[in-house]
Length: 413
Image 1 (tube, one colour):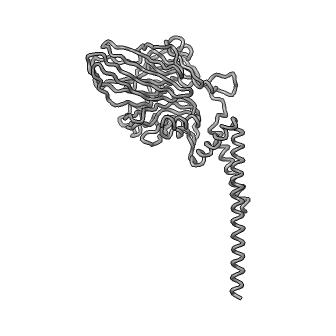
Image 2 (cartoon, helix red, strand yellow; image 1 turned 120 degrees about the horizontal axis):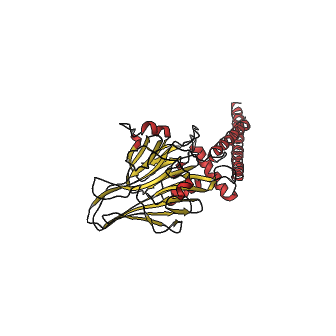
């Protein structure tokens, strides 16, 4: 009977491992976004502006990249460019991942510029507390750059000075994986006192194709006030649409630190404010011919006096949800619960330690197949050891019971 129970247990664990890795690891080709033509587009908007209908021709990524001024970037994991018009990060390719198992297939295009069929980009900016005569940079602003290329060893600074002699800067830097550091800076050389607040947002136009697997989340994801929030695109459309008089409570929140953005099955883009920053979080959906999803936040109001300056820091993760990379960022950058960006499912108490164990074996074997085999052997050894100990304990208990019965019979005689 004990051997049969152990067999059932081993079968159950093996099935759980197989299901887990079918979900976690790519097994089917990923289709790139299709290019369409003559769709209704809306101009890119900041965090609180309304969308206006505008019809323009849908173009390919290559066409838009070639006709715009840009700063290119590349490291071992990503490559792409920053549009100098608006200072928008809207072009990012995952260098290590392809759209299919065919080695000649294209790499994954995660971020795409406005004007393509499925724009997906990151925007930073400033807003005024009240109307004044101060010119702020917007999506039509053409920034100047101190370098045409950004790399892990060479940061880039975008600069724009308005008519009032107020200089705005955006400082970009990247590491060797998927993390950007972004600093917004204001140098007030004018005679005016200005009151502004920074904003950052991730914008995704058109609803992406999702797997719709009930134990796999795709859509909005955030960790705000130590609470993990996962909402699909339908939830955003139902609960956070701009036309609603009253949105659900999760659409607007306040926090210190945390992270927020959008997640796909294997990839993710999230904004990461500094841990000591007080932020107002905002999730929105609108539709003006196309679905428009936004996840962003605004910082506190800053009062910048003449001949003074201000810097506003934050980070951005755009890349693959690899456990070892997320874990490293969580430890080194003190990002709370960053590994929870991976959907561990209902049985996280089991899938999470199993994943850590297999990744540990992978670090030595260099192959997930060998890592799974090694983990399976380890589990068999643990089960065998447990069964052996159980049998030994049962044997001792039986001996004790037998001796006790014998003593009882002797006494009764």
